[in-house]
Length: 424
Ligand SMILES: *Cc1c(COP(=O)(O)O)cnc(C)c1O
Image (spheres, rainbow, N blue to C red):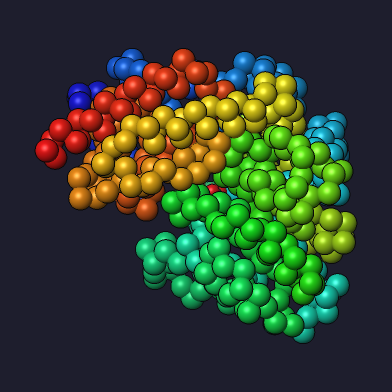
C-alpha cells in the first residue's frame, strides 16, 4: 500500500508531467540483478525488465565497470570525428549477427525509421521503383514505436488518433498469414516489416512456417525482408534472434552461427532495448552493403548515435550474451517457467504463449482484469504489467537463477489461487 512518501512522488509526476503512462502504484529507487526496491526498501522481483531492455539484469557488474571506465575517458564526440570505440563495436556486432553493416542509433523507434528510410532508398535507387511510390508492407497488431511515421501504420487507434496527417506508403496485412502478405506485394513494394513474435501486440507467436514463407516470398518478389527484433532479439526467446526458431533443419541449438545457411534470415534487422545493457538507449539497423550503400554523407544521422559510451556498452552487452550463457539460460528457464505456469492449472489462465523468458499469460477477464492482476502481483512482490488488457507479460532478466524463478513462481501461484478463491 502507498504511504505518504510514495504518494508525494506520484503526485509530482502527475502535476508536472502529462498522463501518457498509467504506472502501477509503486515508486522504485534501486535495483540489482533481478531485484528492485521501492523507496521504503520493499523488495520486488522484476518480471518486466524494462520491456526486455534489462536482459542482463540491473547493474550488471561488468557493464557497470565498462560504463564507469568509458564515461570517465570519453562519452560523447558526435559523428563528426572517428573514435576508438565505434569501429570495434561495429565489427563485433556485424560478425556476431552475420550482416555486412550496422547503422547505430539510440531509441528503437529511430532504428525502425532508419530501416524505413534505407529500404525506401534501396527501392528507388537499386530496384528502380517510380519516384514517390515506394510501399512498405506491415502487419496488423504491430508495434514499432511512437514517431509520427511509425504510428501511421499502427492498428492501435489510441496511439494514432488525432496525431495525423499520417504518413502514406504503408499497407497493413493480417499477421501470420503469408498469403495476404504476398497478395499485397506490387511493383512498388520496397520492403516487408514485421516482428517475428509480436510483443506489445500480446506475445503473438505466428504459425511455424510463417517467417520462412515470408523469406521465400521476399526473395521471389525482390522485396526486402525487415525484422524488428527490438524486443524479441538478443536471447529473449532462447535463441540469439527469434527468427532463428524458424530456420528449418538448422542443427544448432541456441543461435545459428552467422556463416551457416539461415532459412529465415532477413535482409535487414532492427535491434534496440537489451542492446543498451539496461544502462542507456542503444539501437541499430543491420543490413547488407547493397542496402547501406545509399546511406551516403548527409543522408541520415543522429547526434548521439554510435557515441563512445553507447558503443562500449553495446559491444560488451552482446559479448556477455555468450560469456554469461544468457541465451541458454533463457531457453532452459523459459521452458521451466512455461511448464510451471501451465501446471498451475488455473481456471484464470486461458493460454500461455511465448518462447524463452518471454511469456504471455492470457487471462480470463471473467475473473479479473489484467490491470487488477498486475496490481495484485505488485502487492505480492512481482513487477509485471498487462499488455492488451488480458495478457500478462512475464519477461524477467535473462540472468535469473532457478532459485529466483522459483521464488517468483510461488508468488504468482498464490496470486492466481487468491483470485480463484475470491471467484468461488
Ligand atoms: C519497444 C519496441 C520498439 C520501440 O522502441 P523505443 O526504444 O521505445 O523507441 C519498436 N519495436 C518493438 C518490437 C518494440 O518492442
